[in-house]
Length: 297
Image 1 (cartoon, rainbow, N blue to C red):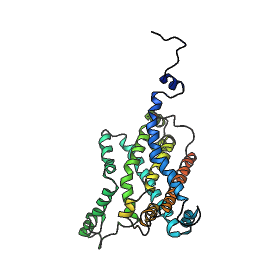
Image 2: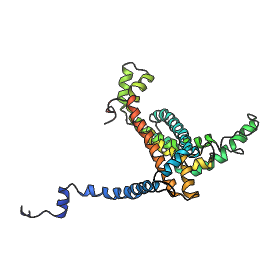
Image 3: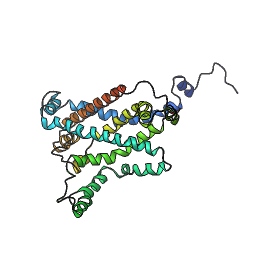
Image 4: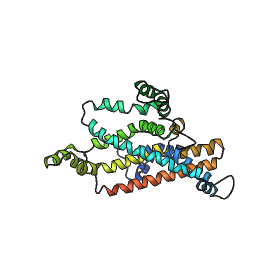
């Protein structure tokens, strides 16, 4: 039986009139989780960074940028994160183009993403056993007579580089494969019909459509590589060339128990990452104009 027109709406109807329907309410747990796990810790760390043990409210930041042993960690971290990210993208792009044409795409994709399940520490342990002075790689080369003494491949820059590349490549590859697979094959076929060779099809058809996705891929992979810590400790030189900024933050907070300084270094990390992400997203416009409307709809 229909209700009279003057009957006041129920609570559900009142919420719906204000845009708070059932679907919208489902977002609230996710928003609460973001506030608890990201917004609150970030705000707390930001406030704590301006409460140094000694000096004025900018004392932590002044101390960081006045000490080469501290601010050089920014360059050391960028020197690792940026090349690893670029190499991952350069490798992932041709592999993704090849995998999208293969019949057993799922099987190969599963094999390529196995390192994600291993974790950074387990990969580091494997590299220590394989590339160490007494590892399989060096022993094989010594047995073959290729080298006269073990090659130092770990506890330096290249050990960290290899670890990050192995653990980060699957993530980069999966994102690249999704972008490549989303481009309509008819566009490539049309370009081939008009006489464009493989190089021109890539430069004038695929690349303009891939640039937005590759830029986002670069940003996500860079943020992951910039926060390197276990690899730099286990496979690098924590007191030397691979003393990354995360190590400086850890030492300040958990070795000197200066949580205010540790928070300041963490905020500097966030600012540097944000600056690189903004530059990457702004730089994509040098290569890309328009929208990727040519993708599959």
